[in-house]
Image (tube, rainbow, N blue to C red; front, side, top):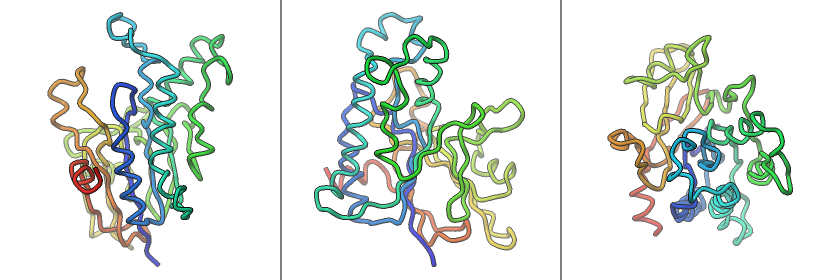
Length: 257
């Protein structure tokens, strides 16, 4: 029996950017009724915990931890709202901790005095137990890897002993060369796909799922042009193989705004 799964990554919610795109996504999922939704992480940008910006005081004036958390939880509520309002069963929801959510843990490790569920900083503020049926936090200081329907998912896959992310011009091809197994990740904000139809006993697919960002980033310069915004539908999914369909942010906006 085949299944339908929707995958997206790197939404980078930020108080400075509207969460309207999550209304579109929620309506899209409600209409499609997939079996599973996979959020590959970096849903919360957490600019308030970005140590890079400490060197640029102008950048941190508007940053606020509470606003970052509220923005993330608002996005998660929006994308599930239509299911709740209409009392319909939502898809099985799987989430992954990305390196941006991991900023919370790094901040606490650097300064344990700031930790606190009520008045401090805490990973629990993301409410992952509420939003997800399964949520995979970092494991051994790296993104977790989890398998569903014969596909391995992770925010990113490590390239070797140093744990840096597999990347490059042919990212999806590199995933298959490194792992010899259908694998899907996010992280780079780019999209890439590669099929190995000759694999035995079933074909395998490498997929890099782009991003779900709501705006360009001033710090990224020309790299913004390389980023693809949208989601991927995996149709006829079974034993690690599927037929992909790319749905761009522009398509979602046109259909649901």
